[in-house]
Image (tube, rainbow over all chains, first blue to last red; front, side, top):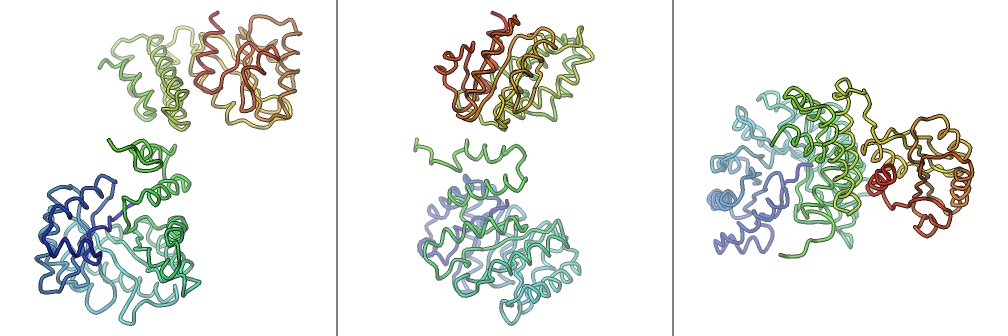
Length: 270
Length: 210
C-alpha cells in the first residue's frame, strides 16, 4: 500500500499556525513522524493565499527534505503553482492533482512529461463530481487520452475516483469500487488512490466508516491512500488487509510492521 | 562469515530463494554435505526455540522450514547415505474423530526439520492405523498423536493404550493439542507432552536419543 502522508496541510489549524509563525520545528516533526511510520510520500499543501503559496511551499518542502528522504507529493489547487514548486524537490514525487476541470492537465502533464513524476488525477470535471460510475469513467477516459498525448505511462498515474459522503449517498462505496475495478481491469499498472475521509462526513464515530471503506476499496483494487501513517489503527487494518488479499507472502510484512512497533499494542516509550 | 554459517543464518531468516545457491556454494567450497545438513538442523532448532518463546510467528517458522527443504533438495545427491533423516522415523497423526491438522502439520514439519523421517497419517486416524504404521516402517522412534477436541481426548487415550498393549517396541509416544495437558498425558501413559511445534521437535530429539 502506497501511503501518502497527509499531515502537512495548511487546512489543518495547527499546521496553519505553524506556517503563519514559520515554526519549522513543527513541520519537521510532522515530516519525521510520518517518515518513521513508513509513509511512501509526504503530501505538502500550503493552503495560503495564492500570492504567498509558492514561497510557502518552498519553505515547507525545505523543512521536509531536511529531515526526510521521502519524495514529496506537491499539493495545490492551482496547476501552475504545482508546476512552479516541482523545482524545490530533490526527488521526483507526485503532483496533487489534475482533473478534467479547466486546463489542469494541459499545464501539469507537459511539465512532467519527460520526468519520473507521478500525478494524482481526480475523476471530476467542469460540473463537479459526477454521480454515476459511468460518468466518472468518461472523465477517466478523457484523462487517459491526455496522458497518452504527453507520453505519461499509466504506472505514473494515481487515479482518485472520488468519494462522496455515505451519509448523503448510499451508493458512495459502490460507485467508488466499481470505478476501481473497471480502471484496474483496463490498466493493471495504474494506481488508485483516495483521500477517503469524505466517506464518513456527517456520521458519528467516523473512524469506523473510514476503516471499513479502506478494506473494501483495497479489495476493489485501491493501492494507495492519502492518509495519516501514524494512525496505528488504520495502518494495522491496511497491513491486515494486504495479508488477507494475498499481497503479503507469509504475512511477513504484517509481522515486521508489528515487530517494528507500527501496529498492534503501542510499544512503551523508551 | 563462512558459507556454511551463512546457510545457517539464512535458513533461520527463511530466505528460501537464496538458500539453494548458498548450499551449492558451500559444497563447492568443500564443506561436507553432512555438515551443511547439520547446520540447517541447528538453524531449525533455533527457529523452534524462538517460536516456543513467542519471539517469532507461524509464517516465519514455515518459511524457515521451506528454506531448509530447498537446501536439502540440493544436498540430497551429495549425502553418502542419500538419507536426510538420521534420527529415525516419526509416525504422526490426528486421532480418530478429529479433523484438525494445522497444529499437527506444524509439528510434523518441525520434527522433519530436526532430522527425522516423518510418516504423516493425516487426520481422523484410528488406533489400528497407528499400530500398522509402526509395524510397516523401519526404525520408528516416535509416535505423535494430536487431538484438538475435548471430545476426542478419549480416542487419544485409546490410541496410547493400544500402542502400549501392542508389545511393539523401540518408540516413544508424544501427545499434544489445545485441550491436552501434561497431567492428561501422564494419566494416559504417554511418554511426553509438548505445548507447541518448536518444543515438540526438541522433545522428539531427546526421546529418540535416550
